[in-house]
Length: 170
Image (cartoon, rainbow, N blue to C red):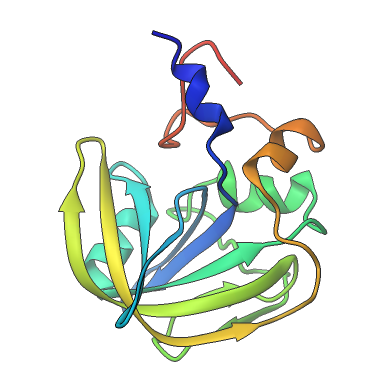
């Protein structure tokens, strides 16, 4: 089997974030997806070992910001290759707080949604959170960054905790 065939699935890059009253977690994922239109729901899948996963689980809500093509590797690295356990990912960048109380970046993001978790599905190494959208907005007209753009143009790598990680591949 050639698991790299899944690299051709079309997806974007997103910053998922949550605040549970004591902690703030944020990470970069490629697993944001609109699930239904009525009610308006999206899902996001996060590695169980990721600090942000626990914050979302405990908070019961999250924000999902669509990363745009203006993002550079410093921005990607901030959210994708560091842990919120010991690093404030929002320090020094433009951000706002959603209707659910979750921070989200306003720079390098073209839109966001704020969601209340309505279902959590255990999918092995990850949890999938299905959220009902309670607020949403557009932030810029810059094109959303696709995972293909991230790999091809920015030459980004897939970290081991990503749902699309394949050992030995980019």
